[in-house]
Length: 331
Image (cartoon, rainbow, N blue to C red):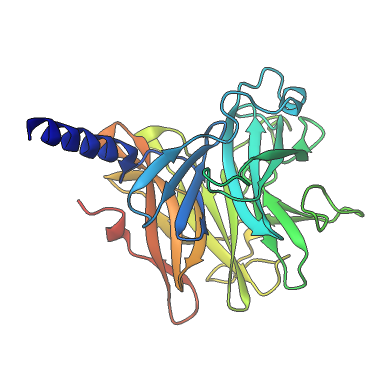
């Protein structure tokens, strides 16, 4: 009986070790395959988690491990494999995951694409295939930063990639139907930006702190979420989520007051407080008929570590998103 109890205890300990409820993540995105939710986020080789209920999470193997694709060295010399801010979607029998490679605080950056037939590691069809570089930014050539990708498909079925961080703000470019390269002739748009000091050099990220776009389609409207201000400073992070909307994926996106986001507008959705700082870099989804806002937040009471928060997203009488901050701050 003692041996049986010991085995049972070891099993339970092993299970609790594999399943975590308050996981440390940055820049989370999600998708559901079958009855399993998969979470992808910034990390070495892109961090991956899985869950049956969006509460208990199991750590999976990263996509690339410590061996980033060879092309990344051409874009960011010396790149070690810490990949940022992925975006995941499903199309024509494959999962498409865009990811960022960059040198911090520089627009020496690119967005890559990796695909898979399934997200289930136990399936014989499982296997990530890198498709290479999709978009690249180069200092002094481009006044934008090719990180923080998000794919949106318009009402005619054409794919668009929106992205951006600081510099000239949030950009969007049309992709080919296969979603792996920019369509010709190139069609570029500026969706959102903030004021930037005129005296700064073009290779300086500047003080127009905006990044992490995510477009969510609700009924006939496209909602553009972005993060304002600063991440990555632990308990001193000042990230906040703002939103605007448009009936056209190409914009212009207007906030609640009618201000254009490409002229500095944006309506607040959620921001940090004394317990959770820098709430931001959101994504948004509909699962089983319910809408969710997925963010990371820095836990002030735990050394400023960034943690996953999944919030119910409701809508006011005028069609604007609402989240209940008590869900993120139960203390």
